Image (tube, rainbow, N blue to C red; front, side, top):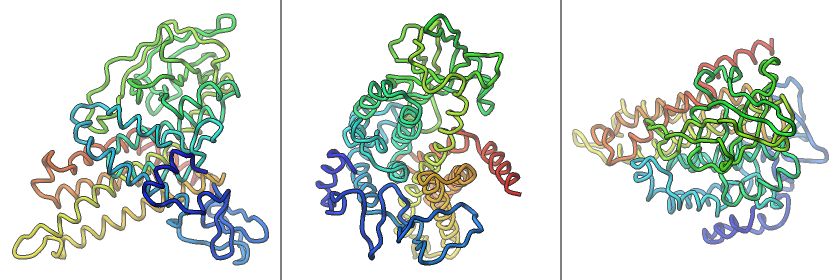
Length: 446
């Protein structure tokens, strides 16, 4: 269950329940909802399985379905805890971090202290021991306040921690996971100047020399390079094999020959650093290969597929946060003797955005539930990421219009949401790439 750090904050929120402390399952209406399973799968006399778009019929006695927004008690409490944390620890620093283009050290430290950088890691590594869906809820809640802080949590959990957990040796896990849970940030190095969407055309090379490799090359757009203590570097160890030579290497920050360049001056998510990273004759022991030689391309695809759900959650939270800030203003602002919310033209626009927000939420939650229960989710993840980014774009633009002149100033957070949302159509697969992926999945279905 949740670690003592999360439990401690839950107690301070007054939300601790006996159910959270009681073990691995919760009881509702006589059914058992097992931890890390979707709360809408109520187990009866035997477990049931189902597939997306399956034509298989299941009887009511086998499966009782609840809405996608039905959460376990643990998920509800984590969601409420993060909401309180974001209001108390992040909100006061959002404007400062954006203006200075720097993540405040106290925010990063707090994320570690509250277990939000190790949500799915087991307690043996100092993690919270929660579920993938809990990660999605955490990212969504943080993004309502600051998408930059949400991204810190999202990438650490869905990329760095996941790569070590799934592909690391026991020695690598023991060496890195406890530190990733405590105070170590990781950074994923894939993109290069000539390999963006065409990621596997990367030019970084790893040449074998005895029992170690020499890495040479450069990476671009590397998130958290400024703070990272360990880099997961994709380099080709066998160029003659093409993309099947791509291998993932663990490179510590203090390794000789690794250089982090000047961070980019970005339009949005400014509190998170994005830097070029170069490797000049970087010597890496063979024991620092993560997973198997030549399998890096598979690992990258798998992690990015899951990560897209995290980015969908970030865009969803961003859009919802912007909407939540704007609507009260439309009810307070008066023109022609009544609130602007009361004009039917405004109501129709607001209703349309609310519908799109709900649709994005359902797409995101569905993809997350499929992923954590081991069901096929690639198409659903791309749909969620694509649509949530589109909805964030529409929502933030509309909110500026509804706020009028003040929405265009930095005195209100609306313009920041507008700047932050643009990256959602670019990173972890552009919107065009998501449409390509969706179309390929559809082609395979028919």
